[in-house]
Structure formats: structure tokens, C-alpha cells
Length: 247
Image (tube, rainbow, N blue to C red; front, side):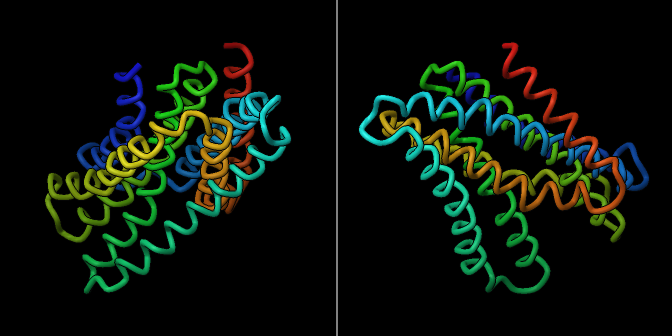
């Protein structure tokens, strides 16, 4: 189980690396339509996973507890979503003093990938508890964030290449953009290991952060123009729902 959790936390970073490696094979970044479809599919997967793999199991675990069955899921959702937004705001203030282009790049990378890594780490910590529901949710979350990281890696490496950098320099630049995710995941695992009794709250918090990431960054980009992104959202949602119910 430990090996599976480690794989779940590293998968999104490997997807970023795969996207950055496109600079070796393509002369220009993937088209906007392809990126919208990939982001839409990932968004659908994550939304379905937040419901069937995290929120519904959180409700079931809350029944018969000290609190009404609706309270831990509702509070956890808010904690996860608002906590992620708070982390983004604080990280932005801490890094806003970076000078020049490099400071802005570090800011953008940290704001985007650190909270995502923490969400994956939290899901992996839940999976370590041995719950099949938690493991399924962690797999879906890692898959969803990994899919959206593929075009992100390319979006970093190709501008470096177009600015005159070598292919290897562009590749390593794109790869570096995802290295903060394992750090965020490790931090979340260390914080979550000792709070197993709060499992319903943690599952809902992971769902809240997942929904926040999806609504904030993925759906707007997928649905910005045309129907391809919307169709991809529905396909991803449907596929993840089938997997959650059938498995």
C-alpha cells in the first residue's frame, strides 16, 4: 500500500515531465482544442471522484458519530476549498517579491502546483488507511491532476524553446514546473497520518480542494470556446462514475 501511495503522489509530476518532453517531438505546442478536451476530461474525472469516492463515503462514515451525518462532509468541503484558496493567497504574498521574470515564474509554479500536490498527498494518506473507497478516490484524483499536467508541462517547455533555449533546457524547465507537487504531497501525508479518526472530515476536505481546483482552473479553460471541452467533461465524469460504481 505504501508503494501505491508513493506512485499516486509521483504520477502527476511524471505527467508534467511527459508534457515537457513533447518539445523533443513537436515543433509547436498541442492545439488549443486538444488541450481543452484533455482538461475537460480530467475535470470530469475529478468531479465524479469527488462525489462517489470521497463525499458519499464521508457521509457514510459520519453516520452514528458524535455529529449529524451532514456536518463533517459539509464542513470538510468548506475547509478543503477555502484552505486551498488561503494557501494560494499566502504563497502569492510570500513570493510576490521575486525580481524579474524568474520571480514571476516561481510564483506561478508554486501557486498552481503546490496545493495540487497537497491534495494528492492527502488522498494518498487516506488510501494508506486501507479503505477501498479512499484508494479509488486517490487513484482518480492522481489521474485527473496528471492529465491536466501534461499540457501544463508543454506550456512551460515550448515558450523556453521558442525564446531560443535548447531542447534540453526547455525540457528541464518544463519538468521543474512540477517538482513542487511531490513536496506538497509529502507535507500533506506527514500532517494527515496522525488524524485517522477525522477520516470523514479529511475525505470531504480532499473533495472540496478537488472541486475548487476543477472549478477554478480546469473547467474555465475547457469550456472557454466550442463544445469539445464540455463533451470531454461529460465523458470524463461518466467514465469515472462507471468505474466507481462498478469496482
